[in-house]
Length: 155
Length: 349
Image (cartoon, rainbow over all chains, first blue to last red; front, side, top):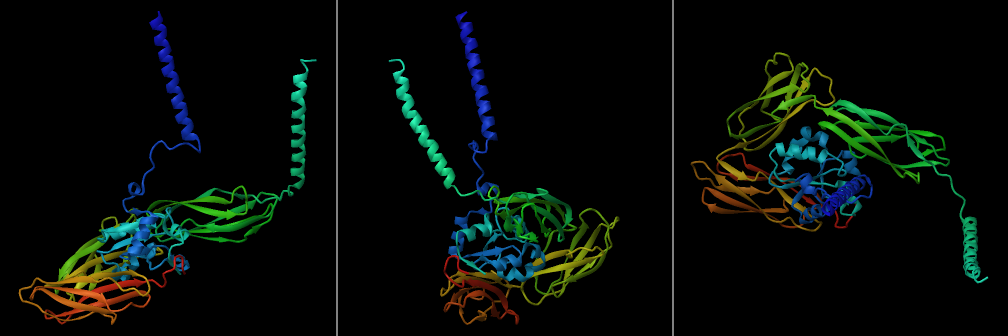
């Protein structure tokens, strides 16, 4: 009889623990201040071509990478990373021939756009890939981040 | 009496504390500045879906911004969220109960598929200083080329090259080709008879014999009977090669600061032909640059080292290096490009 009661108590305790854990996980998931249980994806896991701001700055300082700004010309004129080329994404097919002599296939090309919300960088990176370019990177946070950090710009 | 004393002793300090707190609250309330009525931003709709759009087109939508607060509302800035959207606001200052129109133009460009952008409106609303609007669209290509890029590959000097490309309507609708033009001389494209339903056309792209060796990059533009903002364009790449070849055919000299020189670069000239070849001269294309030739294997392989004599002027540098050999009257060409920044200051303009 004692063993029966002990077993029942054990089952009840286990059930309470499981229910409490489930309730806690549910609350954590719904709460705006919940704790991340799974690790967020790194930039590389999002896209192997993505570079952080620090990595982008390192390429800029090394001076062997071509920086390609794919925003519209009007936005480029208001400010861009110092030394960047401007090839608007929507004009890529029409104007690539004009830029080809300045874009050697063996040279690393770093593409950037407004911010991480801009998909134009990935679009142009894909087009360069179709043209045989194998060393293409994307500055994930783009112009907004570069400008906020006060790094070299031109107008 | 003894039972009442502890209560009395506790009551006295507590009442003093409460009195002071009440006094402090009254002083704070009297000293507080009068509340300024604030503007409150509100949108008639949280976003807009432009629906299915063709590439290279634009569409416009007008949002209505309202001030539902008791005070004036100022719109400080509108962030489109991408260079694919442009905005125009008819009034930055909205009185209580008033409204303003925010016109948004979305450019589909070369997007392909579902597009989702978030615009941000910064205002003087203290409760909602950065309010967002969502933009969505489903952008479809009008025409599709197969292959997407025509790579002619290496073509021997003096030889022709012909390739076939398919051009089709993305939605299977019939269309007619009115004309085809090419940006490269000696590159022509003609349309063969369309497929059965008229939604697919075969294009024959031909390159006439070339006497100059080097990379080929151009495009073929097709005019159809459709009214589209941008004509469908096919990129064409390749290279004309001879027995004497230079590698690479384009060099990025580097991105340097003002007063700095570019690091040295090397090219290799190789002769795969039966006769030995000599390099007669190398013209680097700019007096700032200097080219020095070293023979690795006489008549067969040479190295050209490119150095900078002095710091180039700030800005983009684009030159063509010419290598004159005994193989042909037409020199080998190498495109050179480099950038000298205009200043070294961080954040400088």
